[in-house]
Length: 308
Figure 1 (tube, one colour):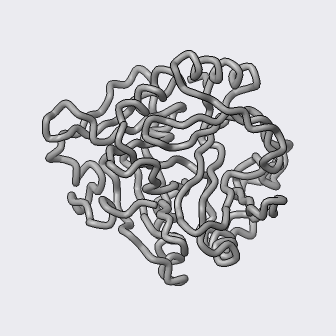
Figure 2 (figure 1 turned 60 degrees about the horizontal axis):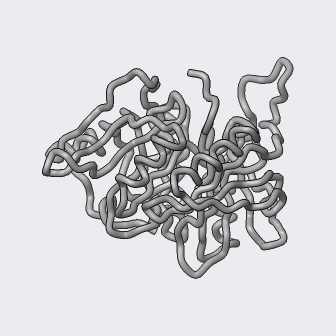
């Protein structure tokens, strides 16, 4: 489909407990490219395949978690329209000036009903992936670590799932792709939303803990690369949550692990293509285990309880 509004996840700002240790982890283990520091001391990273200047910002803090999540929109006219649409819907917005973040234009910031801070932006310096745009090579040489293709999606938790779901669908133009129902068969326990042809770009889970992060997900190209990620995670003694496994929801393959500050990340591969005319896939409460972890058909305790 033609993506004319919100295009994709663009960046997020993660709080870490030890910046030096985290820079080393995201460079050497995750295999991201370190793009430098800003005047505030924040560290910037991109996946090697990504074209824009950065997709991850690390900030030293005394508590782990995510400060905000950002989506890139099609152009400046789209940014203005979505800002107006948010305000018309009753959502307060704030303008963050160009240059506050390295190589990034003006951002529109707002808070969702689940308590999470989101940003929309249209402009970020394109630095490329090193292959060029005329007769490029097919692969990026010299990769190290897990080296994902891109920042793919987030799963975040908060109490007012219905409010955030409706905001993203009715105002930002996302599509509801999959959902898990509560025992009453009516209430959504979790929803997966897409602004593209991906199975999901963000997931919201109902949780009494507002403004919490379950995981940031990074895309890999093949199941073999997911298995290699498991090897790298083990070689570096990274704390693993679960995997390698397959999801029932999205059909993707996965590993969940934790960075040195306790922020969960996912290495993810696969998933089906989504189009807006597809029916919503619904999972009843009794099938939640198989929906999330298709092979084991049950959820482990950490997956349900640990958020930052």
